[in-house]
Image (cartoon, rainbow, N blue to C red; front, side, top):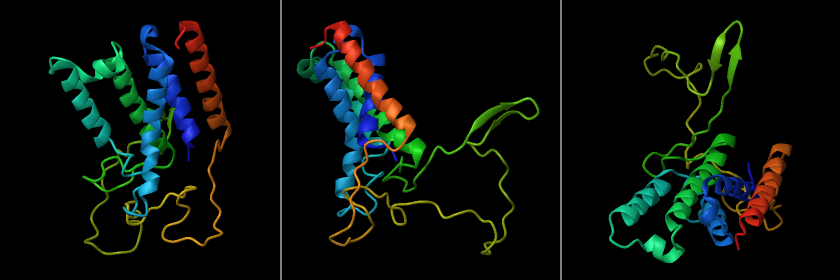
Length: 222
């Protein structure tokens, strides 16, 4: 799974791409990076809420609510609290922070090994698992969305290829350094806190650090 470092690096790339130069400074970038880390904080609630990691913070309801509140603050209220606290570019910064939450915080885990996107309204983990190709014989082929017709009902009988059980908070646990296994662990359990797990993750981290540093230097963002 992507480490927090990879989430932060992707959020930095989004900040560099989406923030106007006039608003791109160290404070705005740090805020966007911090918000991208928020989804992973749900790991600390695993002992209180079963299956909290990848559910409590990794859903689309939180950023949806945040976007609605931001819209009200910027367009309805006579004086924006966001602009008063963050300055003239506060609206831009807050909007990019929400994008970072969705794409870098939640989306990256969703496409790698799953997130409970609609929790607590609907308890099921989803993963963007598939491929898309162009073939000179088969044309465009994609496996992200199953468009095949539903198989005929077998009247509720068990057995056969009826599909696997959906992943929910009751039967799913993601191992982390904070919570390596479901339930209690022995005192000598190994706790692994990954930095990068693959070449593509290292590439994202290096690219994020390089692009953010370069843009701060070019724009004079302090």
